[in-house]
Amino acid sequence: MPEIDLNCDMGEGSGAGTTGSDAELLRHVTSANIACGFHAGDPMVMQHTVRLARDAGVVIGAHPGFPDLQGFGRRPMQLTPHDVHAQTLYQIGALQAIARAEGATVVHVKPHGALYNMAAQDDALADAIADAVRCADASLLLFGLSGSALIRAGMRAGLRTVSEVFADRTYQADGTLTPRSRADALHHEAARAVEQVLAFVHHGTVTATDGTVVRVQADTVCLHGDGPHAADFARALRAALADANVTVRATPR
Image (cartoon, rainbow, N blue to C red; front, side, top):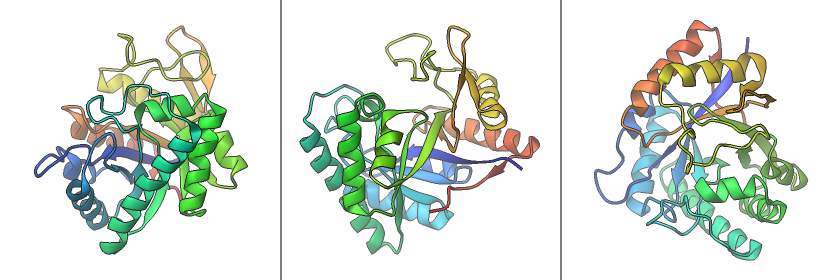
């Protein structure tokens, strides 16, 4: 029977009462990527989100990004690999300390936003991230875009890699995500996103915006948690996967 992990980016507010629908989302996903304070989040939100995920039995991961609160980490930044290595290591360590204090464990790392997209194509940047993960804990899983430079860098670093696909993002013919600056970057209809996820799981393919059928490795599916209907979509997707006899569970460490 096919299986898939469902991951979601969480803890992306700052200050009390800004975790949005995270608690509801945690009822439907199996892995949580928790912002580490650079693109979003703060120590209190990190702690609160770790507690929510721990209590829900959801696997915890670090979600490091560029130091860009104003741009939500979605603006490209021209940093050296050395700087990216240090910043990634710093963010992972912060979440590890909070998780440890709460009796929880950080299991994986998934870069955020522009850092993620740049590392999907830039070998030097990808190697810097992978080595930072290895330095933090060589048993951590590294999430990266299916077929990307980040997955290859993780393999070179001796890490276990998890190939990620996206439920609500559209794809280009080369397997990259359509830039958010384009009007067709997102699937706005839940039914279309569910259809795309089922194609990932059952066929290992996605249809690009130009009609090209692209092969992908789908170990985990990302659900974005910052939309107004994120929890409703997560619930609908879980139901659709159950109807299709797909097992939903976190990737074993």
